[in-house]
Length: 273
Ligand code: PAF
Image 1 (cartoon, rainbow, N blue to C red):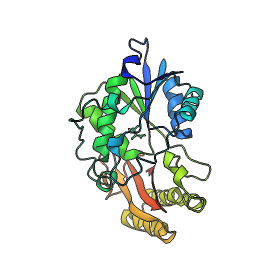
Image 2: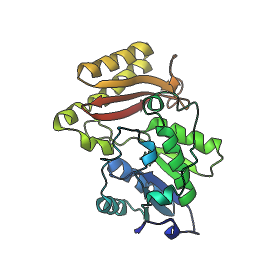
Image 3: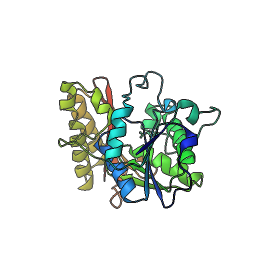
C-alpha cells in the first residue's frame, strides 16, 4: 500500500475501476469492512484519511478527534487498500470560498442539531471525489442521514460516482462501531448498547403495526431513564428523512434513528424498517 500526502502524487490513469472509501481515520471494523468491499468489487482500493475541520461545529471534538496515521495505515493495508491518501488541509482547502449546501434532507436531525455539519461533509466529499476520481464510493449506513445527503449531492450535481451503502458493523453487544466509542468511560460503554436495543424494540413495534409516536416515545423515555440525553428518537421515511407518520412502506424505505449523549459522548445509530 502506498501512502500519499500530496495531490500531485495521486495515481492517474489507473486501469480498471477505482473503489473509494473516504474516512477521518481512527479505523475500526466498520471502516475495514468498507475497505475490503471496495477492493473486492474494484481493481483498485483507495482510502482517504482527512479530519475535515469544516464538518465540526464550535465546541465539537475536532481538536481531540483520534489521530494515529501509522496505526491506521497498517489497518488499511491489512484490509487490502492500495492507496491511503492523507492530504494536508491546504491541499483540500487551497481556498475556502465555496460550500456545497444540500437543502431539504439536511433540515432535521443531525442537520438541526449540528448546524453547518452537512455543508462541511458535502463540500469535502465532493472535493475528495474530484481529487481521487473514483468510480464507486463506499459509505457506512451508521451515518444514515449523511448517506442521503451525499446521494442528493451526487444526483443533484451530476457527479459521476456510484454510491454503495454498507450495513452498520456492530460490536457483539449491538453497539454500532464508531471512532467516537473510544471516548466512552467503562460505565458509559456498558450502557451504550441500550441505544441499539431501543431501536430494535421500536422497529419491531412499528413493523407489527404499532403506533409510531408511542414507539418513539417509549424508546426515548427508556433511554432517558438510563441516563441518556436524547436529542432525537424518530422513525423517518427515506430518502427524504421526513418524519414517518404512517405505516412503513417496503423494507428499506424507512428507518428508526437516534442521537443521544451518554456522559459527554454523542452517539448516533439507526435500524432499517
Ligand atoms: O463519515 C465520515 O467519516 C466523514 O463524514 C466523511 C464522509 C469521511 C467526510 O469527512
